[in-house]
Image (cartoon, rainbow, N blue to C red; front, side, top):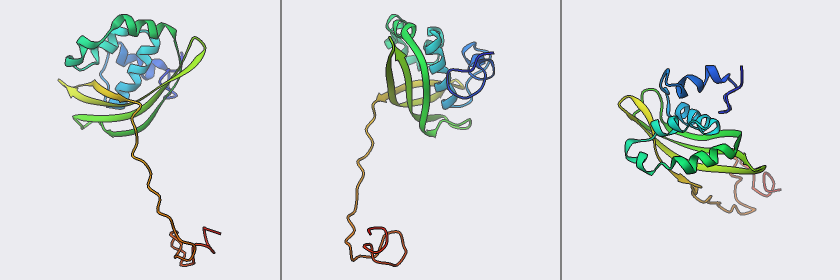
Length: 161
């Protein structure tokens, strides 16, 4: 019994295995993403192709993906943010980071991916690689202004001291 490469902590047979084998469909967009990551690591190009949105299948380069998959060793999959994509949803997005080693060198793939239900099955639609987050805005607090933590003290005596 081997652990699933998706990082769920479950066995492959109890996690992504049945999805990749076609025994059942992914209940959520995240489950599909985890299974796609595992299929890539295992070199199962058929699953990657089957779980693409129909309009994207012509862009799928099996040879290129197959070469990459042969070199890839799983390091981990981190799902950062999931919006929608639940069992009752029709679409969703996932921000994730897939980590690999290729030729002994660490690689990561950071993506904001979109998914939708197609005939009742989740499919990968497209994604933005290395998505940029909105820049943080910082409001400068003067030393003699009230502390933003809500203590009622001056900033210089509280959090600014």
